[in-house]
Length: 157
Image 1 (cartoon, one colour):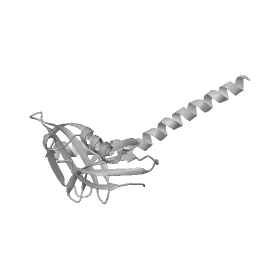
Image 2 (cartoon, one colour):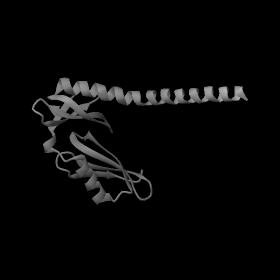
Image 3 (cartoon, one colour):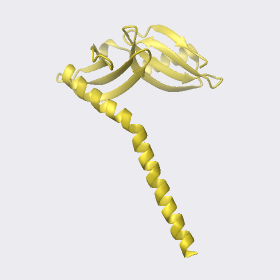
C-alpha cells in the first residue's frame, strides 16, 4: 500500500511538471514575439514604455505595440513582420478597443466577443474583432482603426 502512494505521488509530480513544461513551450513563441516587438518599437519609434501587444495574421503578419512616448502621449506602432516597416499612429487619432467591440456588438449581435486586435489590412490600420455568433460559428468584424468605419465582415467560419 505504501508503494502505491509513493508511485501515485511520483506520477502526480511528473504530470504537474510535464504540464508546466508544455505550457511554457506553448507560450514561448508569443512571449518571444512580444519582447522582440517591444524592443523593435522602442528603437524604431518614439515609444519608450511599451504597454500592449497585438499579433495580427492575414496575408501578412503584423505586430502592434501600444505605448507611451517621452511626452507621455500614447502611440500605436504597427510592425510588418516580413520587412520591419513601421507605421505610427497617435492613439488620440484612433477608436478605442471598447468602441470597436461596441460597434461589433451593435452590428453583429454576437453571442460572445472573443478578442479584439490591431493589425493592418491592405495598408489600412484596423481593429479585427473576433466573435462567436448565435450558432457558435466564428466571425470577424473588421473596422478602420482611425475612424471606426466598417471595412468587412467574415462570418460563419
